[in-house]
Amino acid sequence: MTTTVTEKTRGPERTAPAPPAPRAPQSGPRAPSLPRRAGRALATAATRSVAVLALLGLWEAAPRSGLVDATFLPPFSDVASAWWGLARDGSLAEHTWASLGRSLAGFGLAVAVAVPLGLLIGWYRRVADLLGPLLEVFRNTAALALLPVFVLLLGIGETSKVSIVLYACTWPVLLNTISAVRTVDPTLLRLARSMDLPAHRIFRKVILPASVPSVFTGIRLAGAVAILVLVAAEMVGAKAGLGYLVNASQFNFAIPEMYAGIITISAIGVTFNQLLVALERRFTSWRTPTGI
Image (cartoon, rainbow, N blue to C red):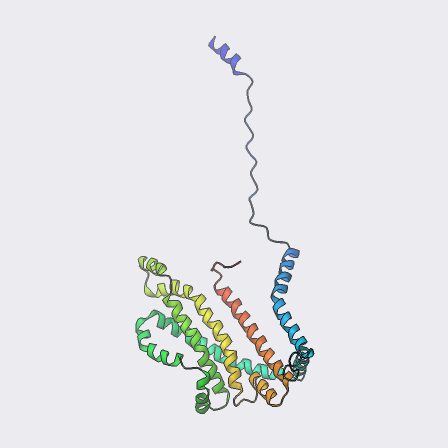
């Protein structure tokens, strides 16, 4: 009897709900399309070119309108024509390669010497105490003030020019490397020491990676110094180089050629800096970018 009542009150049987269909795995944020990326690149290039184009337009208009004396500041089109003439007869390439060879030699030697020395001074207190007073004397002596000394001791050949670039480039790299080692986050050091890591592993795993950004800051400063100091050195006792080109053009009153040499120096400086920035981004890809 009980069984009959139960069967009457149970009602129609319900079917079990179907299991939910598996969702497709969610992919990351969609990459912008090619036209959108091209549009962004064009907008960025246009934004960055506005100030330069405005300066060139002012340079062209000011001499032609009589705002400045065209004898001492020729229009930009005349300078561009002079630059093209120097490029066509090969003299611009000759002077550029001469300057680049000296700059890169002095800059490379400075980086090779200053980075290891800065790491040693920053990490070992005894080395800092030993070399600190000597470094303080030379770091406060301008490189150009020592140019006559370099010429007297090493002559007017390539050795003196490479040496003055080496001297001038050493200090930005060395000082930034020392500061980078000494300003490593103490929390990281305490954490590494709490794990009983030996000193050489702390240096390799903590100090070196944390120092890379500041070291590259010094290297970029040294890259700009290498060009500036070399041009000044080439104005004294040189027969080739962009500094010689600028100086000789001034004495011969070839003003458009003089500005062509100055523009070439600026272009080399900007290109060299961009190469160093790209290299820095490659070595510091773990950093979180800042800014908007």
